[in-house]
Length: 110
Image (cartoon, rainbow, N blue to C red):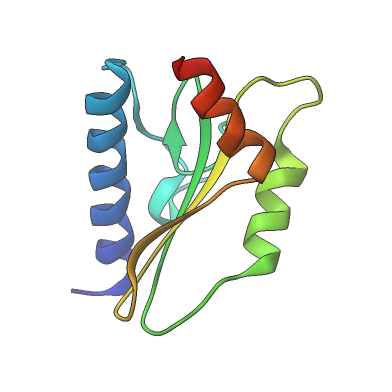
């Protein structure tokens, strides 16, 4: 399986899990995901609650540039939470989000 296929598989997995967790069955990979053509959608997953960027890496890896690029794309005053989801052979699937957004998720749940 090449990197593009691995990335697409991760995006589909994340979209499915988010659909299950939120009950929002409109969540889907964006048209620009997996190295597709660029459009106006932000990130790899289309969701009313999140901006999601997914990356699959061979070893330990966190790209500060990918995270910063995602944060820079979020429109001002947006209520959507940016998520950077990384999958690698060492730790498996990891999620990066700001601590403020992490706390907000718990606060909204109560």
